[in-house]
Each structure stands twice: as structure tokens, then as C-alpha cells.
Image 1 (tube, rainbow, N blue to C red):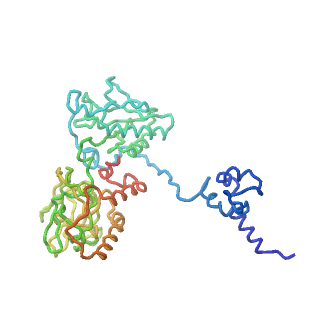
Image 2 (tube, one colour; image 1 turned 90 degrees about the horizontal axis):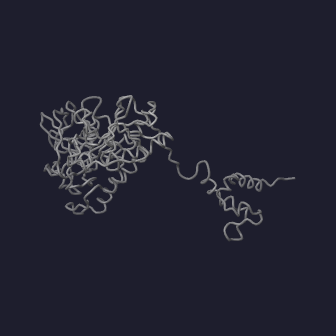
Image 3 (cartoon, rainbow, N blue to C red; image 1 turned 135 degrees about the horizontal axis):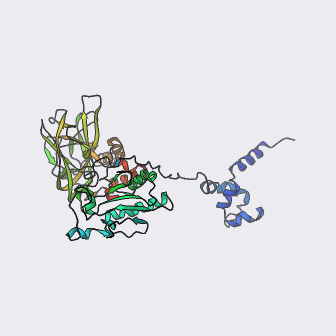
Length: 453
């Protein structure tokens, strides 16, 4: 007897597309699961019978229940314990890239004592050897990070709590200029004092947002935070408004006066000077005072002023290693930066002779089409916060495309008009939040993420 291959093929396809019974039971209404086949309907339409439901409900069967559905499940990232004597970030505690400078001891009689608030979190055990509750006193930022860490500890090790062995010190038991004297530092362990947990405890403290974490000894972990009113805690990646750029015609102009349509001197990845369109400001803040790093060179004498989280190019064009972008806070005397020898000449590698800090009002972060800019004759990146110039430049590709499109559509638009509002540009904010989902905290400069910590 001949076999109707067409009918058989349809039956096989129908069987293959039909989701497993246990998955169907999770997705279908109860009436459709329990009712006889002849009475099963989808919705109220009488013409849609049981035999047609598998094809209609296949997406439901694939998207719910165990296994892969639509979208990608975000797996928790793997945490790596700190090694003994390791500290994050990898800079000294009282520098701009970590918890910032020491601001003076706080005593019970000082005006700044009101900055300290008690922490009565029941999920934290305070050793309090002095029986004065001094270990419970800390700044609000320190309290917030400590409370966040307490939750992480309980999630990591059920039944174990965070333990604080040292907090605010009013008795002078620590070294000179210790942040314990300001309520900005704590020494911590786990409640079970299991030393094998301390490496992971250090990592959890980093993830909780402490500005500096140090696996200091076999007995405890040291953590500290920035000062509440510290200008370092408000730093991003910018130049002061008084920084000078060179225009296409050779005239010089202050960064704060740049307008969309201006063409400024920049450089390509090989260090060749070129002219690039000014597109926008990532940050435009004429009023806030911030801490800036000043990188000074001699022969020729030049000074580049920028925030710690901003990228600057260092290296030597004449060597095989070439140049690379690094955070301004990483530059040290003896490094070489690239300085322009003139508008029609190339860049010269010049040795950094001095680095110091200044507090200046106003900060601006200009972006050019090439992603670089010559400020006070020194080559710098237009980007900050993440230490990868190429990634940052790629991320701003839509901005460059939009600028080209607007230039093509409106070639005669007034270059003396800028639509930039004060504050961080919305596109930059979106990029940062997206990046924070996919990249570890270690990928960002500590000062670049402090406002979200």
C-alpha cells in the first residue's frame, strides 16, 4: 500500500515542533492542559483547535521554563580573591587615585566630629575593645560601603557576619596621618575569623565600593574611603577651561570657548599632527572646583593640566614600543609625553620633570573627530575613566557619524552656536552605565566611578 509521504512529513514536523509536555504545562493555561483534546481551545475563537496549538505556542515553550529562551541570561561574574599584601587600586592609599589626602585628625571636641555617624547595623560585629563605641563611628560614605559589604559577606558565606576590629581611632594607636583618625578607614575580618576567607573578603570589599582595599596582614583587611567633602571624590576626566588649543589658522583659543564647527590641532595614532573637527563636550562644568594634575616638562617647557582619570599619551615615537594612553594619575617623573614643536612640525617625546596638583574652578572635556587633542601643546586623548583609548574612540562612532551627517545636511550652520548644556553629556552617561554592566570595576579609574559608588 503506497505511503502518502507528504502527510507523513507533516506529521514528523508537527511532532518535532511540539514542545515537551512538562514545558507546555508551565506555559499553557490550566484549562488547556487538563481538558480533553476535543474540547481544547485557544482563546475564544472556535476554529482554532488543539491540533493547531503546537505551532502557535512553540515560542512560549522555548522561552519559559528551564533551558535557553529568548535573551541571554546574565551569569554572575567570577570573583578573584586578592593575594596577601595586594591592594586595589594599585596606588598609594592617600593619592587621588585611591582615598585621597589626609585632612586632619577628628576628636570628640572638634568641629568635624559631626561628620562621624554611628553604625548600629545588626549584621556587623564591632569588636569595640575600648567600650566607647568608637569603632562604630565613621563617615557616611564609609558606613554605606560597610553596610553593602555586610550583605555580600552573608550572601557569600551563610551564617557568617562581617566583623570590624578597628574603626575611628581617638587614642592615637595608628601611624601618623592614618585615615582611622578621620573615621574613613576600617579593619575587618569575618565573624568566624577564618583566615582562608580573607582573600575573598578583600575582593568583596572592592566590589562593595571601598576606594582602597589592602590585604594588609594575616589578621585583618584594611579598607578606606574618600573624604565626604573631598574634591577628589568629585573628579572626572576633564581639562580646566583655561587650557589652550590651537585652531586651524594658528590662532589659540581657550577650551571653554570652543564652539561646534571649530577645527583644532590633534594627532593620529602614529603621532602625525592634523586638524580635527571639535564635535561636543563630554563634560561642561564651568562652576565646580576640582583637583587637577599638572604634568610639567622642560626642554621645551610645557604644562598639561588635567584630571586624574583623563587619558594622556606617553612613550616614544622613535621606539618599537611606540606610544600608549594612560591615566594622568599613572604618569610619573621620568616618563615621556608628546609635545608639539610648532603648528607645522611633528611631535617630540619630552621627559616629565615634575608632577603636582592644583585645585581649579571649571572643567571641560572636548571631543574631536579623531579622539585626540593638543592642549597647551601636549597631546592628550579626548577620553577618560576607562584606560583604553581605542575602545573609547570606537564607542563614540555614532557621535562622529551624527556630526558628519549634520555637517552634510546643514553645511552653512552658524559655528558660533553651541547646544551644549552644563553637566555630563547624556550619551557619555549612557555609555558609562552600559560599560559598568559588562566590565569589571577594575577596568575603570576609581575617580571616574566614584559618583556611582
